[in-house]
Length: 609
Image (cartoon, rainbow, N blue to C red; front, side):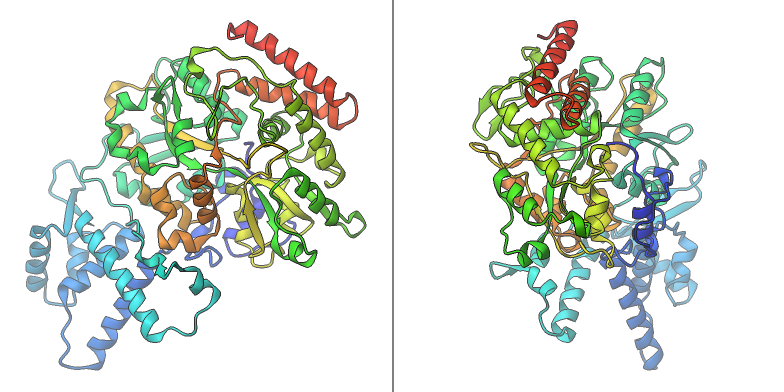
């Protein structure tokens, strides 16, 4: 997707949103101010940090109120250590001892006992190894996570009020999401990564990667070295990654790539296969949403690790549908009916917003709309649950645009045009969600990563009133949620001496612990089942539960944008021909015929058709 027009989102997550503000800012500022947000639940501070503050204050009250109560040095040092870890602050032995509230000699003995018990890890701060920073061990983090859950449940049981709607959502089938496995916080690597000049990362300028930038200090503490991150719009990102591959030595240790690019990057030898760089078991492939993990493969090998899985869904206003007596649309006909009912241009109200800007934006819409009618853009073999993509590396495929299903998709887009805002033909990625967030459209097709536009702004008409659906299906087809997002991979021209450290950083960035941290700080993408089942993540947004259900129903699919090397050019072709169709310059059949001819010529030049 193109560069994030971030001023609106930036204001939302900084807690000072103003409606309809259109000032453009650089994407690297997109998620600035997030740590002070009061809109993101539970904010940048995790529930565990709230528990730390509660226990710290409770301990102080007990010690100050009752003379015979003596400070517990273990408890005090653990509180200080956990707080420092969560806030990415360097904790030294001296500061830890100072937090104990007991004499130095006593605190020093207790500190040594905690180190011997495996609760604290020491990491050298200097080359001499005489100075250390102190960090909670994996054992301590696990025990503290369990304690935090018990303290929270106990407080809710003893002091909680009546059951609210939010409370009710925490329960299912007589059980509680609190009983689900909670993903612990990030833990520091035992040894800092040794990388001359620090870790260099190339990413897309979207909210999830901007969360990483905002959390840079915490990630630097985790991996033990500086992080230098560059963010580009989607087209510039692809060009920079291609230029980097032509260099003798890569400028980046890790690069992000859009899922459809995997085939091109793999075929051109631009990436190191992930199973060559590391033991795949270390990243737990079974924990990734199936579609996102499969999309990272080419020729049976993974070339990246999913960093964000963000399907394109249908966002719809539950309150407007209820007022009109409409049911959530499951088919394209039902969607058109709802769009017609809710379309009232005289009152500035429109039925639906979508990607219709010429080129890449509309091209994606064309491919996904064809998928709504059961038609992939190339002739993939049909299998149970979708279409087979495992043999794409064999090169035995050709365009499949000018078909009857393709015609139905084209005619559907022409119908959508009737119920769209007047500027729809220049509307792309973020522009389609803004009018939805502002209450000017009743429905919008959009990636989940765009949800912060309306999920974080309490003044937004769509706030708390949005439902999430897979794409409604055309006749004879099934609902599909086309998977988008990014994987992170390692450039093939990375110097060998940097490879090990790059692998360790890549594992950290794509870990469940990191993914949960992104969500807590505003991201609405997630590639892992374990993160989606985390109680805090579930409470952050209904999106995660909705996506999880779609994944189990096998509705998350990546075949609508098959990762063949020619896919970017095919998308561009469709975006040009169908834009002429929507403008009335050519007919739907002409658009299909011309797009088919151009795509076939492209593949003949590449020797794949």
